[in-house]
Image (cartoon, rainbow, N blue to C red; front, side, top):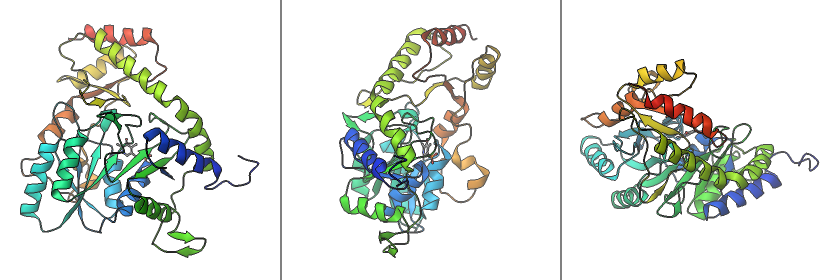
Length: 348
Ligand SMILES: *Cc1c(COP(=O)(O)O)cnc(C)c1O
Protein backbone atom coordinates (compact mmCIF):
# COMPACT_ATOMS: atom_id res chain seq x y z
CA UNK A 1 0.00 0.00 0.00
CA UNK A 2 2.81 2.42 0.90
CA UNK A 3 4.66 1.52 -2.28
CA UNK A 4 1.67 2.39 -4.45
CA UNK A 5 2.17 6.07 -3.61
CA UNK A 6 -1.61 6.52 -3.56
CA UNK A 7 -2.65 7.39 -0.02
CA UNK A 8 -6.13 8.83 -0.62
CA UNK A 9 -9.11 6.91 -2.03
CA UNK A 10 -6.90 4.24 -3.53
CA UNK A 11 -7.13 0.51 -4.00
CA UNK A 12 -7.60 -0.38 -0.31
CA UNK A 13 -10.62 1.90 0.11
CA UNK A 14 -12.08 0.63 -3.14
CA UNK A 15 -11.60 -3.01 -2.11
CA UNK A 16 -13.00 -2.41 1.37
CA UNK A 17 -16.06 -0.67 -0.07
CA UNK A 18 -16.78 -3.77 -2.15
CA UNK A 19 -15.99 -6.26 0.60
CA UNK A 20 -18.07 -4.57 3.28
CA UNK A 21 -20.91 -4.24 0.77
CA UNK A 22 -20.76 -8.01 0.09
CA UNK A 23 -20.66 -8.69 3.82
CA UNK A 24 -23.93 -6.77 4.12
CA UNK A 25 -25.34 -8.60 1.11
CA UNK A 26 -25.64 -5.37 -0.84
CA UNK A 27 -23.96 -2.98 -3.26
CA UNK A 28 -20.62 -1.40 -2.31
CA UNK A 29 -20.60 1.13 0.53
CA UNK A 30 -18.99 4.58 0.42
CA UNK A 31 -16.02 4.88 2.78
CA UNK A 32 -15.97 8.14 4.76
CA UNK A 33 -14.00 9.74 7.58
CA UNK A 34 -16.16 8.69 10.58
CA UNK A 35 -19.64 7.60 11.64
CA UNK A 36 -20.93 11.11 12.24
CA UNK A 37 -20.03 12.12 8.69
CA UNK A 38 -21.60 8.90 7.46
CA UNK A 39 -24.94 10.01 8.95
CA UNK A 40 -24.55 13.55 7.60
CA UNK A 41 -23.77 12.24 4.12
CA UNK A 42 -26.62 9.72 4.25
CA UNK A 43 -29.10 12.52 5.05
CA UNK A 44 -27.60 14.97 2.56
CA UNK A 45 -27.34 12.31 -0.12
CA UNK A 46 -31.05 11.57 0.30
CA UNK A 47 -31.81 15.25 -0.17
CA UNK A 48 -32.66 16.43 3.35
CA UNK A 49 -33.81 20.04 3.12
CA UNK A 50 -32.47 22.56 5.58
CA UNK A 51 -34.88 23.07 8.48
CA UNK A 52 -36.79 19.80 8.02
CA UNK A 53 -37.75 17.72 11.05
CA UNK A 54 -35.91 14.42 11.52
CA UNK A 55 -37.37 11.97 14.04
CA UNK A 56 -34.93 10.02 16.19
CA UNK A 57 -34.45 8.87 19.80
CA UNK A 58 -32.84 10.84 22.60
CA UNK A 59 -31.40 7.67 24.18
CA UNK A 60 -28.40 7.45 21.85
CA UNK A 61 -24.82 8.59 21.32
CA UNK A 62 -24.63 12.38 20.90
CA UNK A 63 -23.27 11.85 17.39
CA UNK A 64 -26.68 10.75 16.06
CA UNK A 65 -28.22 14.09 16.92
CA UNK A 66 -25.12 16.14 16.08
CA UNK A 67 -25.24 14.65 12.59
CA UNK A 68 -28.92 15.53 12.09
CA UNK A 69 -28.14 19.15 12.89
CA UNK A 70 -24.98 19.20 10.76
CA UNK A 71 -27.07 17.95 7.83
CA UNK A 72 -29.48 20.85 8.38
CA UNK A 73 -32.25 18.90 10.12
CA UNK A 74 -34.16 19.71 13.33
CA UNK A 75 -34.21 16.81 15.83
CA UNK A 76 -37.67 15.51 16.81
CA UNK A 77 -37.47 12.99 19.64
CA UNK A 78 -39.70 9.97 20.09
CA UNK A 79 -39.61 7.83 23.24
CA UNK A 80 -38.01 4.37 23.26
CA UNK A 81 -39.58 0.97 23.81
CA UNK A 82 -39.13 0.34 27.56
CA UNK A 83 -38.08 -3.26 27.10
CA UNK A 84 -35.72 -3.10 24.11
CA UNK A 85 -34.55 0.49 24.63
CA UNK A 86 -34.73 1.31 20.89
CA UNK A 87 -37.24 3.09 18.64
CA UNK A 88 -40.70 1.60 18.68
CA UNK A 89 -43.10 1.77 15.67
CA UNK A 90 -46.19 2.67 17.72
CA UNK A 91 -44.53 5.51 19.62
CA UNK A 92 -42.98 6.68 16.35
CA UNK A 93 -46.42 6.90 14.74
CA UNK A 94 -47.80 8.79 17.73
CA UNK A 95 -44.90 11.26 17.68
CA UNK A 96 -45.28 11.90 13.94
CA UNK A 97 -49.04 12.54 14.33
CA UNK A 98 -48.61 14.84 17.32
CA UNK A 99 -45.79 16.79 15.66
CA UNK A 100 -47.75 17.28 12.45
CA UNK A 101 -50.76 18.54 14.38
CA UNK A 102 -48.71 21.14 16.24
CA UNK A 103 -45.86 22.21 13.96
CA UNK A 104 -45.85 23.63 10.47
CA UNK A 105 -42.27 22.66 9.80
CA UNK A 106 -42.29 19.60 7.52
CA UNK A 107 -40.99 16.26 8.70
CA UNK A 108 -38.75 14.56 6.19
CA UNK A 109 -36.85 11.65 7.71
CA UNK A 110 -36.45 9.12 10.52
CA UNK A 111 -33.07 8.05 11.93
CA UNK A 112 -33.40 4.72 13.73
CA UNK A 113 -30.53 3.66 16.02
CA UNK A 114 -29.71 -0.02 16.61
CA UNK A 115 -28.36 0.88 20.02
CA UNK A 116 -25.89 -1.42 21.80
CA UNK A 117 -26.13 -3.77 18.79
CA UNK A 118 -29.83 -4.50 19.46
CA UNK A 119 -31.75 -4.22 16.17
CA UNK A 120 -34.91 -2.13 16.18
CA UNK A 121 -38.12 -3.51 14.63
CA UNK A 122 -37.28 -2.70 11.02
CA UNK A 123 -40.37 -4.28 9.53
CA UNK A 124 -42.59 -2.08 11.69
CA UNK A 125 -40.53 1.11 11.39
CA UNK A 126 -40.19 0.78 7.63
CA UNK A 127 -43.95 0.39 7.34
CA UNK A 128 -44.52 3.58 9.34
CA UNK A 129 -42.02 5.52 7.18
CA UNK A 130 -43.68 4.33 3.98
CA UNK A 131 -47.14 5.21 5.24
CA UNK A 132 -46.07 8.65 6.48
CA UNK A 133 -43.88 9.42 3.45
CA UNK A 134 -40.61 9.71 5.40
CA UNK A 135 -37.06 8.77 4.44
CA UNK A 136 -35.49 6.12 6.66
CA UNK A 137 -31.84 6.18 7.74
CA UNK A 138 -30.32 3.49 9.98
CA UNK A 139 -27.60 4.41 12.46
CA UNK A 140 -25.62 1.14 12.47
CA UNK A 141 -22.59 2.50 14.34
CA UNK A 142 -23.16 -0.14 17.04
CA UNK A 143 -24.76 -2.91 14.97
CA UNK A 144 -22.31 -4.08 12.27
CA UNK A 145 -23.35 -7.65 11.55
CA UNK A 146 -26.67 -7.44 13.41
CA UNK A 147 -29.77 -8.87 11.76
CA UNK A 148 -33.48 -8.22 11.69
CA UNK A 149 -35.50 -11.06 10.15
CA UNK A 150 -32.36 -12.54 8.55
CA UNK A 151 -31.44 -9.28 6.84
CA UNK A 152 -28.48 -7.18 7.92
CA UNK A 153 -29.13 -3.98 9.80
CA UNK A 154 -28.29 -1.25 7.32
CA UNK A 155 -30.13 -2.87 4.41
CA UNK A 156 -33.66 -1.96 5.56
CA UNK A 157 -33.70 1.78 5.12
CA UNK A 158 -33.03 4.25 2.31
CA UNK A 159 -29.52 4.65 3.68
CA UNK A 160 -27.39 3.53 6.61
CA UNK A 161 -24.35 4.83 8.46
CA UNK A 162 -21.54 2.78 10.01
CA UNK A 163 -18.73 3.89 12.32
CA UNK A 164 -15.32 2.21 12.56
CA UNK A 165 -14.26 4.08 15.69
CA UNK A 166 -11.78 1.72 17.41
CA UNK A 167 -14.20 0.41 20.07
CA UNK A 168 -17.00 -0.50 17.63
CA UNK A 169 -17.59 -4.15 16.64
CA UNK A 170 -15.72 -3.44 13.40
CA UNK A 171 -13.06 -0.98 14.54
CA UNK A 172 -10.17 0.66 12.72
CA UNK A 173 -6.97 1.93 14.40
CA UNK A 174 -8.34 5.44 14.18
CA UNK A 175 -11.47 7.04 12.72
CA UNK A 176 -13.48 5.65 9.86
CA UNK A 177 -17.03 5.26 8.64
CA UNK A 178 -19.18 4.11 5.73
CA UNK A 179 -22.52 4.88 4.14
CA UNK A 180 -24.75 2.38 2.39
CA UNK A 181 -27.57 3.66 0.19
CA UNK A 182 -30.27 1.49 -1.34
CA UNK A 183 -30.36 3.54 -4.54
CA UNK A 184 -27.40 3.90 -6.91
CA UNK A 185 -28.18 7.53 -7.68
CA UNK A 186 -28.00 8.32 -3.97
CA UNK A 187 -24.76 6.35 -3.62
CA UNK A 188 -23.29 8.35 -6.45
CA UNK A 189 -24.36 11.64 -4.88
CA UNK A 190 -22.74 10.59 -1.59
CA UNK A 191 -19.49 9.76 -3.44
CA UNK A 192 -19.53 13.24 -4.95
CA UNK A 193 -20.40 14.95 -1.67
CA UNK A 194 -17.58 13.23 0.25
CA UNK A 195 -14.92 14.91 -1.89
CA UNK A 196 -15.68 18.61 -2.41
CA UNK A 197 -18.70 17.83 -4.57
CA UNK A 198 -16.32 16.86 -7.35
CA UNK A 199 -17.79 15.01 -10.28
CA UNK A 200 -14.26 14.95 -11.66
CA UNK A 201 -11.09 16.64 -10.51
CA UNK A 202 -11.62 20.36 -9.87
CA UNK A 203 -15.22 20.29 -11.06
CA UNK A 204 -17.81 20.54 -8.29
CA UNK A 205 -21.33 19.54 -9.18
CA UNK A 206 -22.60 19.82 -5.61
CA UNK A 207 -21.57 21.79 -2.53
CA UNK A 208 -19.49 19.08 -0.92
CA UNK A 209 -17.17 18.45 2.00
CA UNK A 210 -14.04 16.44 2.70
CA UNK A 211 -14.85 13.15 4.36
CA UNK A 212 -12.68 10.37 3.01
CA UNK A 213 -11.91 6.98 4.55
CA UNK A 214 -8.17 6.82 5.01
CA UNK A 215 -6.36 4.32 2.81
CA UNK A 216 -4.37 2.94 5.76
CA UNK A 217 -7.51 2.45 7.87
CA UNK A 218 -9.21 0.73 4.93
CA UNK A 219 -6.31 -1.75 4.72
CA UNK A 220 -6.73 -2.50 8.44
CA UNK A 221 -10.51 -2.78 8.13
CA UNK A 222 -10.15 -5.33 5.31
CA UNK A 223 -8.22 -7.60 7.66
CA UNK A 224 -10.57 -7.03 10.60
CA UNK A 225 -13.71 -7.54 8.51
CA UNK A 226 -12.67 -11.18 8.02
CA UNK A 227 -12.97 -11.72 11.79
CA UNK A 228 -16.20 -9.75 12.36
CA UNK A 229 -18.67 -12.65 12.17
CA UNK A 230 -16.58 -14.78 14.49
CA UNK A 231 -16.15 -11.93 16.98
CA UNK A 232 -19.87 -11.14 16.94
CA UNK A 233 -20.56 -14.83 17.58
CA UNK A 234 -18.11 -14.66 20.51
CA UNK A 235 -19.93 -11.63 21.90
CA UNK A 236 -23.22 -13.52 21.68
CA UNK A 237 -21.79 -16.53 23.51
CA UNK A 238 -20.43 -14.29 26.27
CA UNK A 239 -23.85 -12.63 26.60
CA UNK A 240 -25.43 -16.07 26.99
CA UNK A 241 -22.86 -16.96 29.64
CA UNK A 242 -23.73 -13.78 31.59
CA UNK A 243 -27.42 -14.67 31.34
CA UNK A 244 -26.66 -18.15 32.66
CA UNK A 245 -24.46 -16.95 35.53
CA UNK A 246 -26.29 -13.86 36.81
CA UNK A 247 -29.26 -14.66 39.03
CA UNK A 248 -29.78 -11.45 40.97
CA UNK A 249 -33.40 -10.26 40.63
CA UNK A 250 -32.28 -6.65 41.15
CA UNK A 251 -30.39 -6.75 37.89
CA UNK A 252 -32.28 -6.94 34.61
CA UNK A 253 -30.30 -8.38 31.71
CA UNK A 254 -30.70 -7.61 28.00
CA UNK A 255 -32.74 -10.12 26.04
CA UNK A 256 -32.86 -11.25 22.44
CA UNK A 257 -35.77 -10.46 20.18
CA UNK A 258 -37.24 -13.37 18.22
CA UNK A 259 -36.66 -11.63 14.86
CA UNK A 260 -33.36 -9.97 15.76
CA UNK A 261 -29.73 -10.92 16.11
CA UNK A 262 -28.16 -8.73 18.77
CA UNK A 263 -24.39 -8.22 18.32
CA UNK A 264 -23.67 -6.85 21.81
CA UNK A 265 -21.56 -3.84 21.02
CA UNK A 266 -22.47 -3.34 24.68
CA UNK A 267 -24.06 -5.68 27.21
CA UNK A 268 -26.34 -3.26 29.02
CA UNK A 269 -28.03 -4.34 32.25
CA UNK A 270 -30.56 -2.27 34.22
CA UNK A 271 -31.01 -1.71 37.93
CA UNK A 272 -33.09 0.60 40.10
CA UNK A 273 -29.94 0.90 42.22
CA UNK A 274 -27.64 1.62 39.30
CA UNK A 275 -25.34 4.19 40.91
CA UNK A 276 -24.82 2.10 44.03
CA UNK A 277 -24.23 -0.98 41.88
CA UNK A 278 -21.64 0.85 39.80
CA UNK A 279 -19.76 1.95 42.96
CA UNK A 280 -19.95 -1.57 44.39
CA UNK A 281 -18.46 -3.04 41.21
CA UNK A 282 -15.72 -0.44 41.18
CA UNK A 283 -14.77 -1.36 44.74
CA UNK A 284 -14.38 -4.92 43.48
CA UNK A 285 -12.13 -3.84 40.63
CA UNK A 286 -14.81 -3.99 37.92
CA UNK A 287 -15.33 -0.99 35.67
CA UNK A 288 -18.91 -0.74 34.40
CA UNK A 289 -19.72 2.37 32.35
CA UNK A 290 -22.98 4.15 31.65
CA UNK A 291 -24.24 4.48 28.07
CA UNK A 292 -25.64 7.07 28.32
CA UNK A 293 -26.11 8.99 31.56
CA UNK A 294 -27.80 12.06 29.98
CA UNK A 295 -30.31 11.82 27.14
CA UNK A 296 -29.60 14.33 24.38
CA UNK A 297 -32.65 16.46 25.23
CA UNK A 298 -31.10 16.96 28.69
CA UNK A 299 -27.72 18.12 27.35
CA UNK A 300 -26.97 21.84 27.74
CA UNK A 301 -25.55 22.00 24.23
CA UNK A 302 -28.87 20.97 22.68
CA UNK A 303 -31.23 23.01 24.83
CA UNK A 304 -34.08 24.58 22.88
CA UNK A 305 -33.13 23.18 19.49
CA UNK A 306 -35.34 20.08 19.34
CA UNK A 307 -38.99 19.08 19.63
CA UNK A 308 -40.39 16.47 22.06
CA UNK A 309 -43.93 15.10 22.61
CA UNK A 310 -46.10 16.82 25.21
CA UNK A 311 -45.92 13.75 27.47
CA UNK A 312 -42.12 14.02 27.45
CA UNK A 313 -39.81 11.03 27.08
CA UNK A 314 -40.40 9.05 30.31
CA UNK A 315 -38.93 5.74 29.12
CA UNK A 316 -35.82 7.52 27.85
CA UNK A 317 -35.32 9.25 31.20
CA UNK A 318 -35.88 6.01 33.09
CA UNK A 319 -33.37 4.13 30.96
CA UNK A 320 -30.76 6.85 31.52
CA UNK A 321 -31.15 6.36 35.29
CA UNK A 322 -30.96 2.55 35.20
CA UNK A 323 -28.52 1.42 32.50
CA UNK A 324 -25.12 -0.03 33.29
CA UNK A 325 -22.81 -1.67 30.73
CA UNK A 326 -21.16 -4.83 32.04
CA UNK A 327 -17.69 -5.65 30.66
CA UNK A 328 -18.07 -7.64 27.44
CA UNK A 329 -15.58 -7.85 24.58
CA UNK A 330 -14.47 -10.85 22.52
CA UNK A 331 -11.19 -11.29 24.44
CA UNK A 332 -12.67 -11.30 27.98
CA UNK A 333 -11.69 -14.45 29.91
CA UNK A 334 -14.51 -16.75 31.08
CA UNK A 335 -12.98 -16.64 34.56
CA UNK A 336 -13.31 -12.82 34.63
CA UNK A 337 -16.88 -13.02 33.41
CA UNK A 338 -17.67 -15.55 36.15
CA UNK A 339 -15.97 -13.40 38.79
CA UNK A 340 -18.11 -10.42 37.70
CA UNK A 341 -21.25 -12.59 37.80
CA UNK A 342 -20.43 -13.86 41.30
CA UNK A 343 -20.01 -10.32 42.55
CA UNK A 344 -23.30 -9.30 40.93
CA UNK A 345 -25.11 -12.24 42.50
CA UNK A 346 -24.20 -11.16 46.04
CA UNK A 347 -25.11 -7.49 45.49
CA UNK A 348 -28.06 -6.42 47.63
C1 LIG B 1 -20.07 5.93 17.54
C2 LIG B 1 -21.43 6.34 17.14
C3 LIG B 1 -21.66 7.32 16.17
C4 LIG B 1 -20.59 8.18 15.58
O1 LIG B 1 -19.49 7.58 15.10
P1 LIG B 1 -18.09 8.36 15.05
O2 LIG B 1 -17.28 7.46 14.17
O3 LIG B 1 -17.58 8.47 16.44
O4 LIG B 1 -18.32 9.69 14.42
C5 LIG B 1 -22.97 7.56 15.78
N1 LIG B 1 -24.00 6.92 16.34
C6 LIG B 1 -23.83 5.98 17.29
C7 LIG B 1 -25.02 5.29 17.85
C8 LIG B 1 -22.54 5.68 17.74
O5 LIG B 1 -22.38 4.77 18.70
